[in-house]
Image (cartoon, rainbow, N blue to C red; front, side):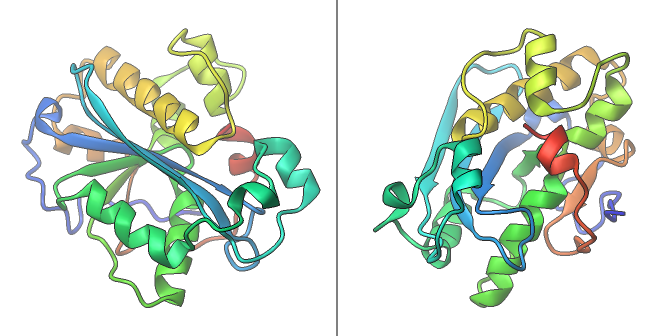
Length: 224
């Protein structure tokens, strides 16, 4: 199982209001399910605060330096031609985390362990600096906050809750879906007002201490 942290190494105080935190929802698209054999082909993020309609975006295709299987292109629509000449992940990750900014910024992804495993694999491979960010797993939070839903796929939740419409299986679109889902869950759950309240839900991972685990089918079928 994924090891979830409880505020360990966080630069945020437990009594920090969630309304005062800046968040970055993010998503990746890949050539497959395992970071040991597959590569990132797209990385996107959306920076926002609760209760504020303003946001900023980061999004780029990534040259995986390998072929994208046809069956994977059929899912996310990213072709070998689209990624040819794009920056490599060794170039993209530093730019992405420079855009994310301060360690006080909290990241979020749906089935976050999947996204983190790919990012950490690339960080280790290219000996890049490991950012000190906490990452909310909206899949874990949804399983505690939302009841009587047919499944916990990201696409199911945003459509069932009427949060947003548009494409799925592209990193920027799904980053916006994660943003919408997180804002909904934090706004409707009255007991979640501070960072300490959120970490007590056992839904927060840390980029520095995330422990790799066997990949489940949640990515393939809880996240999109």
